[in-house]
Length: 308
Image (tube, rainbow, N blue to C red; front, top):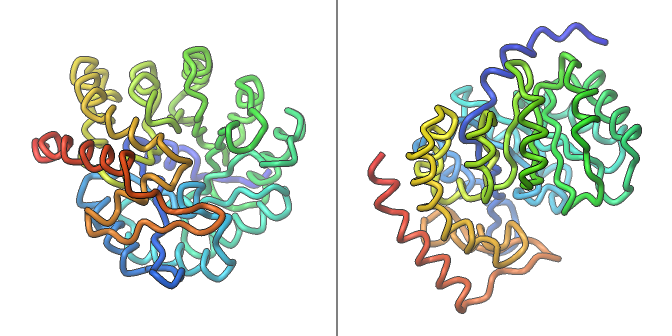
């Protein structure tokens, strides 16, 4: 196992309000780096404490290899060390995941968000060995990412417990939002292994019981409001956290009208942050009640964001 002295430093810094960034595309389907730059500035100005580039919200699996590299390199340059840039590097195969993690390191990423291998449905032992291999060989601090709804496999708490002592494995993004799972993962958190919620709807609950932050979709649209929630919840201010959570709830609900990132991308044009178009097989959210509800929810959050 390589001697990785970065564990303690990054476990302390990867926390709080982290945005799982969308990837804007232009009308002809190309990367829209100008819009992506605006989105990055919007996040930093809004108090976001870290960004994930090319995760599931960023349509990573719709990106060509060169597009992935251009997007990540652009983010690293634009952020310029102000907050951590976390690269999505998870693939279905272990060797591919290691290779992409190494490439992300070369491009300047600060850490890797590594989703449990999708489609192939590994056993718990396979998951354990997969993440250990990435941690040993990838060269970056690793955040485990469990999202069974997308991957068709579930990284169980006992497997997480077996992985957290590796010096390069610094935390977990857990998208299972059940009370049982939140409690089980919260018990595994410690200063050198952070628990980050991956579910906006239950993020407040997770942070109030020990989660160090959230990797959020809704933060793309309302970074300041989401930072307020994270600050209150991680500080243990239950009353303020619940107030912020209640204010965000209509927007979180509105974003559940379609598979991510279809709905959150529909919120970009009103904010001047790019077009709403995802890449096939995803399609743009149609005009109608869902878009109207999204606009209303965004308008309702304006007072909360401006109060910060």
